[in-house]
Image (cartoon, rainbow, N blue to C red; front, side, top):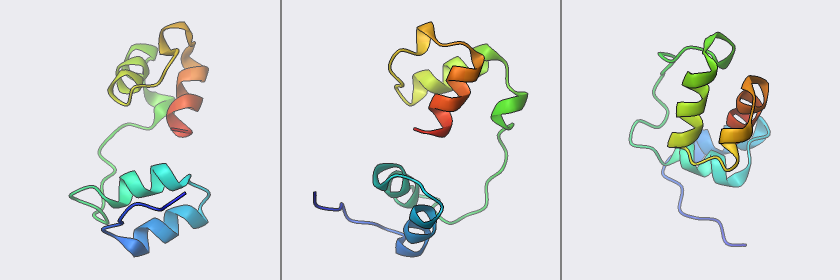
Length: 79
């Protein structure tokens, strides 16, 4: 499988070293604000099920409507 073009190669490699999938690492490394510190969102453990569901909807996680809170957290972390 060919690897897509990566805007922030250093960040991509760091994410891959942490165990992120190629797809997720590329998606993060190719964002406009790649490499900038974020941290404004609440951790998944502090969010309600509805907040987790809305985030899962934004990233198009399949089967989200049938997931409980712990399944939503897991799916979001592994997306």
